[in-house]
Image (cartoon, rainbow, N blue to C red; front, top):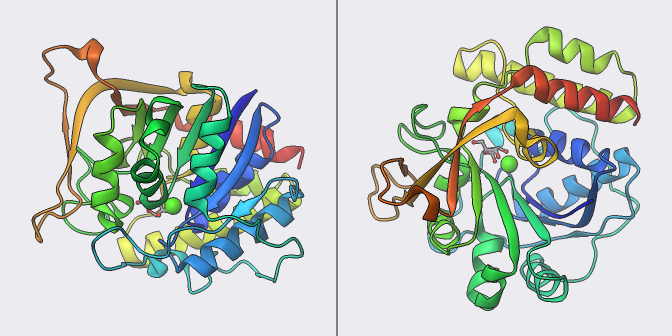
Length: 310
Ligand code: RIB
Ligand code: CA
């Protein structure tokens, strides 16, 4: 069993990541912590509870977190996620309430009470909560097992500006705090997630499973495909955030390289750019690994297997 905290900003692809995690018996989800990002913090917290209810996992506490980035002004991505943050999905006021406690406090308290090194953090939104937790209690850095992050880009360029991916662009200072902390990080940037595309065939196979989670996941992915066609000029949307959960469940589906990763926090032109350097004097000493390859068929097989039962 992997003990896991999922820090997210649902968000249509965060929603699919949550469905995958909620349906995976090998994961002990200690908490879902939400952050303002794709849409405002009140909506990301509501959306996480909506997904939790559809998945039938009200046993997992959902906590609300940071409402704005550490330094820069908030920037949302509702043009990719719809006004609700969950595309065309019929949203509702979830029955089970938010759990007491701010996401930052929950991250600190969980890491300080769990044995050192056993908790994995999945981060699929701006890294504000984790960065603030590290600032509040630096001792957590050495207690984290590892952090698996969706963010950044190297060969793929940016998706919110010419040179930055959204999660890093939305809070570059937080990303720099986390990625320079010395904790073990695996980073799935656009280089990896752009290899995992939700083709019409894959969406149809998911929808055909017929379970509530599979139907809802197919619906939000289909919404993303519409945005991909209308806004980006592509055919199939990349499945960004589910790749984080897929990596935690099946790392063999991915290839990683040790790197030094630095985040641009000073330039207005390239704010949030991730400089991923593979030329290291001592690769074995690197604490950050960059994902270069993803097995798309394997990720979708994992998702279908998990959601078939739900
Ligand atoms: O760039 C993709 C990332 O930004 C994903 O996490 C998506 O949910 C948005 O937050
Ligand atoms: Ca996200």
